[in-house]
Amino acid sequence: MSCRPTPGPGQRAARTSRRACDQDGGTLSTPSSTSTRRGSLRAYEPRRGQPRPRDSGLWLFGYAHSLVGDQIFYVALTWAAVQIMSPARVGLVLVLGSIPRAVVLLAGGVFVDRAGPKRIIIVSDVLRTLVMVVAAVLLGVGINGTVLIGALAVVFGFVDGLFLPAVGAAPAFVTTPEGQTRLQALRTVVYRGAAMVGAPVASALILGFGVGAAFAVAGALFFASVVALSATRMLRPRPPTGQDVTDGPEPSVLGEIRDGLRLIVADRRLLVVVLVIAILDFGYAGPTTAGVPLLAAQQRWGPGGIGWILGGFGVGAVTTAIVLTWRRPTARAGVVAAIGLTLTAVGVLALGLVQLLQLGSMTEVLLASACGAFAGVGTGLFGTLVNASLVLSTPVQQLGRVMAAVSLSGYLGDPISFSLTGLSAGRFGASSTFLFGGGIIMVAVILTWVSPTIRTIRLPGTARRA
Image (cartoon, rainbow, N blue to C red; front, side, top):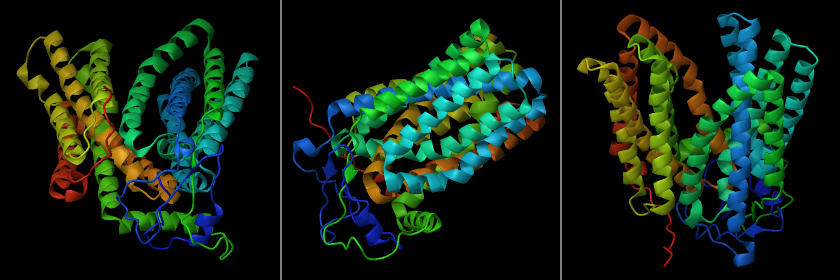
């Protein structure tokens, strides 16, 4: 990405200039403000100043280890809580983790824009490593209780508030614009794959060696992430030419948060994308997280049914992401993303209609899994292409704040989505959660097709190999 002057209101030129360049020796060049447009591709200096192919691989390696460590941590934390707490208190622990994450997210985006994503991700994983070591030691000597588990949840919620905007901004610093879609597709593969790997590994560790061992392995994975990311070269942006490096005081964190929010409001494309993602998450989170177990219990599909359906979602998304690493839409990327969002809505709605067919249990499970895969294909298309567009079209000086706002827009709606899912299932049956969720997602679909801001997204292409 280039370092363009930020067209959003409230941007301070002096701050941008002071945060010049130079992480691991690389810089990205920027067109002048008179010739730069928000949607233009970012110019690079000679090859030695460009991201190296191995940097993408190192970043994905570190990201994968961090995600698997996350999965092991949350499974182990939940299991430890279940052993000593009532179900209500277990839910309270999860809430304790979500509150600091939501509070810190926007400030975390500011720190990413100030220091760069590499430093924030490394700091996050170092903190996780230390906390895991302390937790493993305390549990190893028999110290366990509500206070310890609650403290772990709060600390990890705080760290997530720093990690999420950093990991969202990082792809802009490790690859060229032409390679952005491929990197986002590989990121989708890693993200979905981590969930498939982390939970079974955590279960095996807990059953074989105890919760303390699970925390220790999670700490080792976070440390491996630190090592990989330390070897990754992430290029820092060069400030626009002609700006004064001394004028003006350093703005406050709250001032920079306001600048980021003003940018989103002023930029129609960013505003529509953030709104569509918020609506999608609101309709998707409850049915896929709480609705699937409720539907499996109601239809007597058993735990195996849950696995088949959730597996369908994951396989569909991973398969699509793998395809996008090979064949990437460029001129019609926005249309393909809109089609993907439509497939997501149709898949979720169809999942709510499976029980009406009144087929055998195994047949219904297979159909439900196919519906999940259909929706997974849609999320793979939409998420990969829209994330690539966000990274390429957002001024790099505010990318951390924009990614923080995108994450926050989803997390704010999750508790409401979970609550409405439970109420709907209790009153109208579990299938109704997918009908309501699919209907909400369809609102995002209509907004996407009606508004040209997403349909007209274009992405830079990469020449095919002979």
